[in-house]
Length: 223
Image: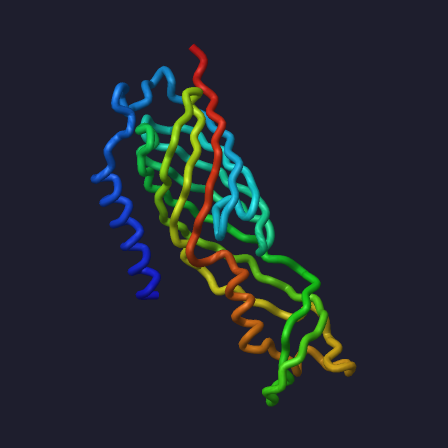
């Protein structure tokens, strides 16, 4: 837990340092987008690793304040479907750094067919078996920062970096009462996942370093 808090602090410190040192590349124009040019609604398409939209998904954003957006994120990932809410701040400057915070739920899955490595309880001999697994839902809180680029039409393209902090412990259980191990039907109550398989499950869950990119189509307010 201490390591996760340390990473969280580092993310926010880096975002503030980077923003303080940022210089606008737009020499002949203001780095701010005027209120008349600023969209108040966005539809985004995103992808990434442990990202708020999953491997591929959508983000609906609404400007609730001059510098702030609230988002509804949804998509599909390796750990099931994903849905969540988030906020993005400092969403004005062209080329700006925008701190972000999102909360997500990954659905996991029920009776997911997988080939897993198991061991008979009391034995250290691992073997592979094809069976069905129940993956519990998982909740994450992701602080991060976006690097924002704005087109002339007011669309946003962002690169986002963060760390997805798990809010619960993901569990994996056998869906079936028996599994075939080395040609023998074995009660799953006598089986456990090998250490290698537990590591694979850990890699697949949506916690950890979060990297993503998203393109937002902006819709300007009508005059």
